[in-house]
Image 1: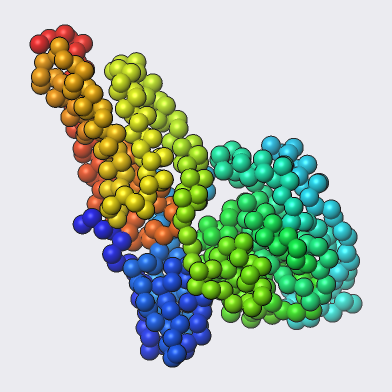
Image 2 (image 1 turned 180 degrees about the horizontal axis):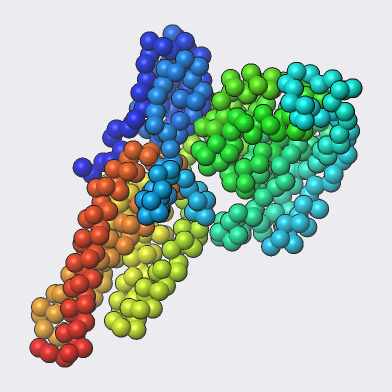
Length: 93
Length: 367
């Protein structure tokens, strides 16, 4: 209950990996690590769901529900009844 | 502020006119044919690695949250030093803090900087929204006629731009190969030696300095509601109650970001709760021991009220800090909202009712 960050929406299918190394390049939290044959998912808990790996994976081996992890934006969207959550950027992002 | 920005634009950018072919109007992606597309003037601006006092003032204003949307650089192509046809091209956002970090890091390097129109938002946030993205890069390459300015086809894009930039699509649509550079512009000189980034250069940090510079903007966002709350409390309640609100806000907006990695829980809300709790203990003990000629249950009631309300205020403020951090995931933040927001609402509600009851007892003068 007291760790909301134990799991996330990141999914990786090593079967589809062609070892281009792009995920390890773009990930800012070292979630993936390059290996001899395939990218290794070494630290899935550190994923912040930014979506950079998914966008740049050439074989769609990575899936993640990406978005901005911002409580203010989510609550504001909920209050205004909007479905799409974007930061208004009057916040500190 | 606008005057300052205009002045800054005058002082730091001397415009050089270059006549180059423009192929954006015809929409072709191959090498431009000069006779067909016609010649258009595109102005390549020049800049330097120097950060002037005017720039520093602009950075300070941006950090203080003054005119958040107006810290902009004009999008387009800039030269640094004396670049040649084979000089590297770096891509940046049109937010002054992003652009200035890049140009000050590239101080002694002859190069081009392609500034995208990200509406004055930094690279990472703009990439999250797609403003720093594939379409904008492809469009900007065409509109400045980059193919005629340089003889190579490589763009060095900040790594954090990868959230919005699909490197393969950029190559397919513009012919330019995207090379994701390091996270921080400051690592660029080291990166350029080998064009390989170390794992260190590829990782975002959230240092004490990074967290401290965010404090003023966070404070600004909540300043008005907090002021209203404390003024009302000072008028109808007591100065101590007003001070309690300010202290709870201080715990959530200042102590929490500073101590973030060292507070021994994982969730933002619980960390904020602990910080507010520390302040609440002081107020609770103070009210309990200072109201010595009051009834015991009244003293206990006030102490309880502080313990109920103050931690909720700082927990809420801490939860709102998630968007400013470099690591909070959507899934986790959603989970936090659903877990803690009802608790915060109920407990603070009970606390406020308790305060109203205690205050009316005082006003009626009973017991």
